[in-house]
Image 1 (tube, rainbow, N blue to C red):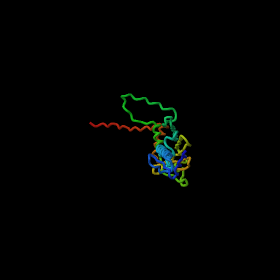
Image 2 (image 1 turned 90 degrees about the vertical axis):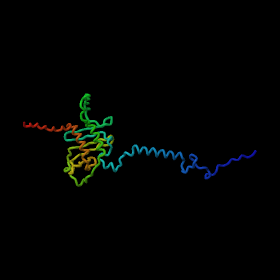
Image 3 (image 1 turned 60 degrees about the horizontal axis):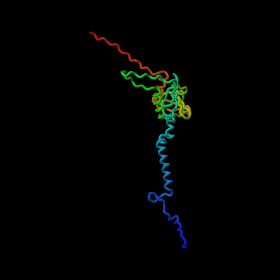
Length: 232
């Protein structure tokens, strides 16, 4: 009976390398492992594109008055000498006024003349929150060279309290305007520093708050001059 012969496998250096679609695979790791790593990189890139790219870098966040986005603001209070205007975010994600809901306005008849479009204080507060979330600090004042009494911050008449959905509330004392009338002196009470902030977004917020507390300003009627008689 002839002796059976079993061929030994070729040495490792002589074995055929990995191939993909009939072409030699040049990398030391397998094509499957490479595909998994590529898939993870794609998923991470998509996550950054849809979420991470909207995150504010820490250096830019330090220059903003509010360190979070507008939709992260859960409640806000504006404390004025005349009273307090409170806003909070409702279940629908929109800002609402504190207290009972307002009485809905009945729809006008079809033949009525359209009146001017007006927005509710809550809708305007929502817009102001968006402005505050992007409001940048003009300058941080050196603590050693300022007097809070000269800036209207020793006993401030106006305070802004912002409560985020998560985290601690922030309190801002609003003082006087700077000599150029372009910025407010604002004291960040938690950080115990004083900054200059552009007046325009804060003016909008204070206007809305005063309308909530004392009602909208009534325009002063312009007196109608008496008609003069023409001599005959």
